[in-house]
Image (tube, rainbow, N blue to C red; front, side, top):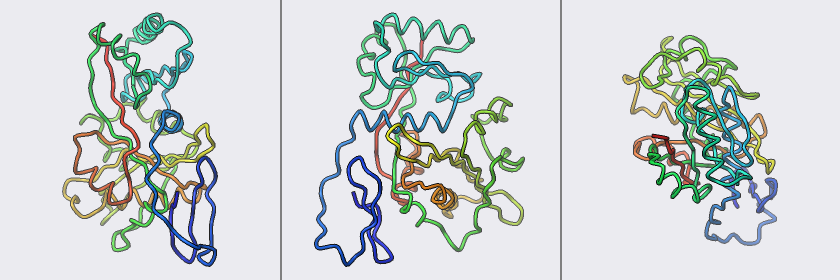
Length: 288
């Protein structure tokens, strides 16, 4: 796959391999081919990287399922991620998930990604589990995202921990960030908090994290993109994401992902202009 073509060379990623740099002079022909379909293995690989980038405060494996809890802060950190088979009968596994979450005073929930765990659907339907929050997972070449930097806008300030202004700009369901929420936001090995300031006012923020998938592929995960209402429609959201991609390039990252709810069409349009495209979807199932 061609990742970029600039400065006299091409960056090409062979299937399942590392990125190669090829000089222009060595290129005989270029031919467009259809994009390879996303497989279950691809979804499993990326979701494994993503869960390392938004780590729960407590987790436990149930075969190929990952139980996650973080005192209720975000559904991603408080749901069972289905990656593979649980290595026990499904009815028994669902009962164990229910017990695990109720022991922690949390509502049992599953995160089902793409076709992973599709065999659970009729079983959860029969138990009356509701479905909610369809989310798109978008991916892009990190170089393409970097190219979206708006040089007429202030450069982002990058920090290893969020300052008070960053935290005030971050909105968690319209409520103040709980203390355990800060633990989740900072619970990563290589994490960055980007802020764009105008006249000492933090007008745009985003969080970036670098993680490695089981395949060895390194990803930038982008989340918590916020722009203050008075500063919107100027490209600040795209700009702060591009600035995180610039930071990630220094950590040997060539690919980026982010999640956006399916009905947030405005954010989707902005991200697609940066080069993001569909990878897979996920949704949640909640116990009654």
